[in-house]
Amino acid sequence: MNKKPFVIGIAGGSGSGKTFFLKCFLNHFKDSEVCLVSQDDYYFRVAHKMTAEENKLYNFDEPSTIDNDLFMSDIAKLISGETVLQKEYTFNNPNTEPRLLEIKSAPIVIVEGLFILHFQAIAQLLDLKIFIDTDEDIALQRRLRRDLLERGYPEDAVLYKWNNHVVPAYKTYLLPYR
Image (cartoon, one colour):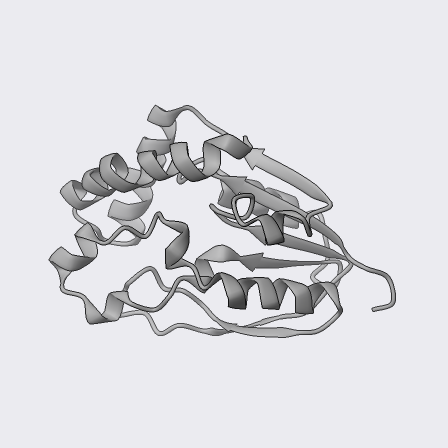
C-alpha cells in the first residue's frame, strides 16, 4: 500500500451501539477496502486465572486492563501497510477457543474501543473520530441483554459491574472526549 490509510476511530460507552454501527458501516465496503482492529482483542489475558467471584469483582473498565503498547504497535503496523495477527478476545468464556485473527491493512483502517480517545497516542493517529452516545438506560438494557444471553453472565454480576465499573469509567475515561 503506497498511500497512508484513512484512520477512523469509533468510541463510545458499553451498550452505546458501536458494534451495530460498525456492522452497518462495514456492509458498504469490500473486505479489501477496510479493516477493523478492536480494542477488545487487547485485554490482558487474566480472567482464566480467576474464580467466578474474582471475575465478577475485577474491573475490566479501566484503561490499565488493555495492552496499550501492543494495541498501538498493531495500529501502527496497519497504518504502514503490514498485516497483523492477533488472538481474539473471548470475553472470559472458558468454553470458547479464541481464533487467530489476521487483520490485513486496507485503505480505511477502523480502530474501535472504549479507550481509543483516552489513549492520546492512539487518538492522534485518527483522521476521523466518532463518539457513539446513547441514553444510559438504553445502554444498560443492551448490556444486560448481551451479557445475559450471549455471555451467560448472571444478572447480579452484570448490574454490579454496571454500577461499580462501567458508569464510573464512562464518566472518567470516555465522557471528557464526547
